[in-house]
Length: 137
Image 1 (cartoon, rainbow, N blue to C red):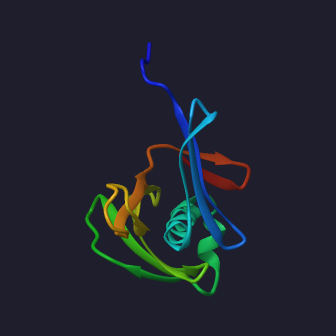
Image 2: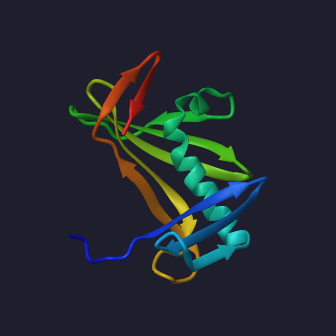
């Protein structure tokens, strides 16, 4: 049995304004934040989560370059602007073109230090074809 109490929360951006809220047991606030640094951080999360809606990368405002590649992996770099913040995403794809990793510099202070750009991203281990889209998880 897990002996930890769950902390549930989110960061969000609505109408260009970011905020964060985390609660113990989903009831008691343990962290609430807003302001320009939090907005920049929320935009970074939105940029990273663009992988869940691949059509974002089909717009005219997105530029692509190929970076280092190996026989087992292919690397791409994508650059675009969301909410006034430039996104610089690095992707790794396998031999079949499946997304393996995504990384970008995201504005934040995860170690409670001064705000700065820190690596943020994910590792994707499973893909499923659903209707006319491929869903990564």
